[in-house]
Image (cartoon, rainbow, N blue to C red; front, side, top):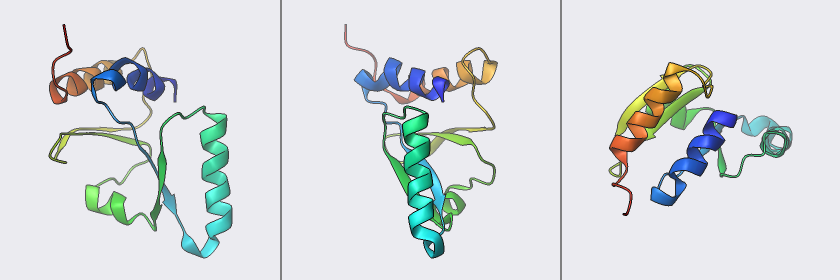
Length: 109
């Protein structure tokens, strides 16, 4: 989670919106909701997390592995996709930064 929080902090002023998505089984709604709330609190998530009923959004987006990270453009197209853990010191983090740089408008001078 530190890598996502770092991206949120670095690019938020330029328009990056971080949104968490968690699979949700409506047959166990109360427990699922509590687990998502607990995880958000423990991980100090400062961005919204949506509950994805039975993983329907994930299927539509082609997300098959968890965790997964997507960079979407202003039109909603997937511009970058990363599967697996994201850590600050990894090349995958640098790739994510570059993808976000390309997707966002230039910083104001």
